[in-house]
Image (spheres, helix red, strand yellow):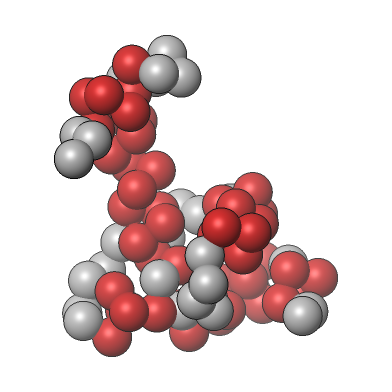
Length: 78
C-alpha cells in the first residue's frame, strides 16, 4: 500500500500537503459523508473536476451545496 510520504515524493510536495488534499477529496465522497467523516471543505473547482473524472461516485450533498454557494453550477451538469 502506498503511503502519504511516497505520494508526496513523486510530485515534489510535502507529506502534509498530500494529506490535506486527501481530506479535500474526502469532503467530495458521498460514502464518507454518510459514514460521518467530515473531510475539509476547502475544495476547489479543480478538485471537483478531478473527482468527477476519476471517481465513479457522484458528489456528496455537502459538495453540491458548496458548489451552488460558490457559483460553480457548471460543474453540476451531467
